[in-house]
Structure formats: C-alpha cells, structure tokens
Length: 123
Image (cartoon, rainbow, N blue to C red; front, side, top):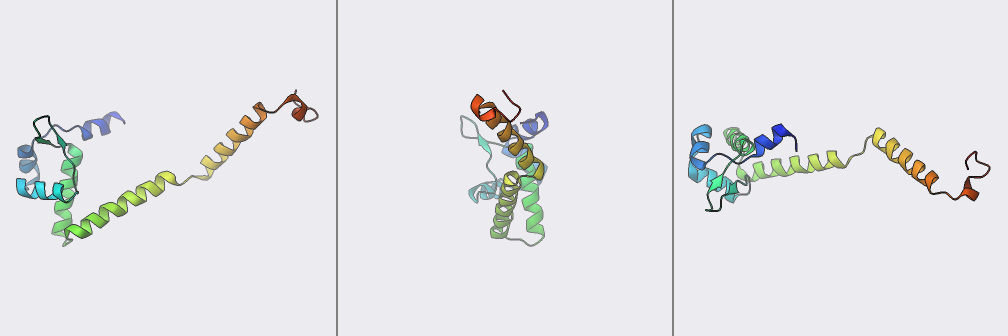
C-alpha cells in the first residue's frame, strides 16, 4: 500500500468527529454500518474508529441519498463498482500477454536439454 493510501485508510477519527465533519447523526452512521455500506475499525474497547476513506464513503452515501437513491440502490452501485474493479484487475493487456509469452519461451529455453538445442544454434 502506498503512503498516501495508507494514511487515508488509517482509522483515527471517533464517531463524534465523523458526525461533525459529515453532518450525519450517530444513528445514521451506525445504520450505514449495519447495512454493510461502511466497515469502521474497532478499538479493544469496541469503539468505532473511522478513516478518511470511511468519511469519503459516508459523504458519498449522503450524496446518493440526496439524489434520490435508496439503500438497496446504493448497495448495488457499490457491488457494481467492486465487480468492475475486479474485472479491470483481471483483464490482461496485450503488453501483459506478450510479456508472459516471452517469459515462458525464455524459461522453456533454459530447461531444454542439450540434445534438444543442437542444430538450433544453442549449446
């Protein structure tokens, strides 16, 4: 994880600070957690601690609700985003395929026996 992302994912804000910064009530924040829209970390005393990423998510949820989306639609939006991100990560570019093919051909050449390479310019 890069430094910037690490800092954004550090859970350092209490629910009180999050309430002030997002203008949401504790009840709303707990409800969004119950619905699986956010997952704040917990201290050993079971207190919720939020990161900047959690606050971004809460503000985005607030915007979605202002646009007229309901909780089910917001859940679908996040599930669709997750699916798209997984597909992006799984999709290989032409460059990736060429690199993998080149590496495989080079590895096959290293493991060939001398009799297989005689006459092919290799010894």
